[in-house]
Amino acid sequence: MSIYNFSAGPAVLPQPVIAQIQAELPSFQDSGMSILEISHRSNLFEQVLHDAEQDLRDLLTIPDNYHVLFFQGGGTLQFTAAPLNLARHHRIGLLDSGHWAQRAAAEAERVGTKVHVLASGAETNFKQLPILARPVDQNLDYVHLTTNNTIEGTMTTALPNTGRVPLAADMSSNFLGESYQVSDFGLIFAGAQKNLGPAGLTIVIVRDDLIGHVDNLPSMLDYQLFAAKNSMFNTPPVFAIYAAGLVLKWLKQQGGLDTMVARNHAKAALLYDFLDQSRLFTNPVKTSDRSTMNVPFITGNTDLDNQVIQDAQEHGLVNLKGHRLVGGMRASLYNAMPLAGVQALVDYLDNFEAHHR
Ligand SMILES: *Cc1c(COP(=O)(O)O)cnc(C)c1O
Image (cartoon, rainbow, N blue to C red):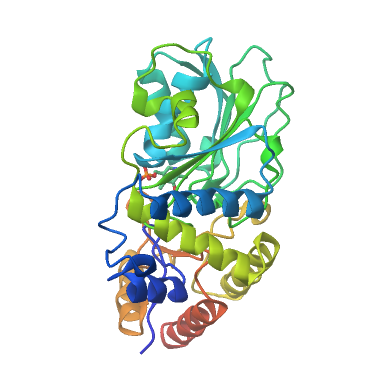
């Protein structure tokens, strides 16, 4: 039986990448050592790091005035790093789109940043995205935006107009899964384990004029220092960078971002179309704000939801349990989830519905 893994993260990786990791694990590049054992200062790893950055630059057409940095600490550490590096006047704006935006706000406040909530989706229980009603105060250091809300299942494609104030985007759950222009942002960050690679690596893409203005930052949070040291201030997460690098090469082989985005839209449409005609399952999100990456859905009956999740697992459709904050089911359809997996899910749900009405 084939297994389809709908986990929100750490999440499914491309099968050819897993096979390659397995094949070259005992001896990386005929060195007689595994990637787990080589020095981060070796030529072997320097090439891995260089390729990963270059492939990322190619895939996202990253302009030359942006740094690409490799951090640890997950998306969560960037909730602290972003205000420390960029909020020189200790004032940021926030689009409150749910759980992860609120977590970012809380961490920014912990380091003395005043967070102005510019708009919130709270009135709709985050079933739709916050809408900016007024012009943005041009004295804010940046506006924090979560491009894809992993728990609520909403996604931003039309960016808010913030005038001269840079946008700082938490792209953790749709990085390389939806297309954005890097030049529309001052800062982009994303934990790798949703749509790029294993846990332990976080990508930071930052415009060079925005960094280097704050002295004496903790070294491990200092964008300027990481840029100067080529992300090698200390030992970087060698294996995670290597594995993410293989995923980047796989993305290029697939045809790059346009191909992936088109596939992701087709996968999401298949599932949403099913949910919209279903008389048992519903997705609560406003149609125009729906995520192509994370699709929450419910029956309206908790016992029945649990039965769906349990029974799906027996059919090889695993990790469909919704986030504990919202319950129900959630199917994550990241780049490495094939259309066949989504079709198997739809067939399964259709069959379940036929037997439970
Ligand atoms: C998962 C997630 C995070 C937190 O990521 P960690 O790597 O666990 O710190 C932050 N933001 C979003 C949108 C996420 O989906």
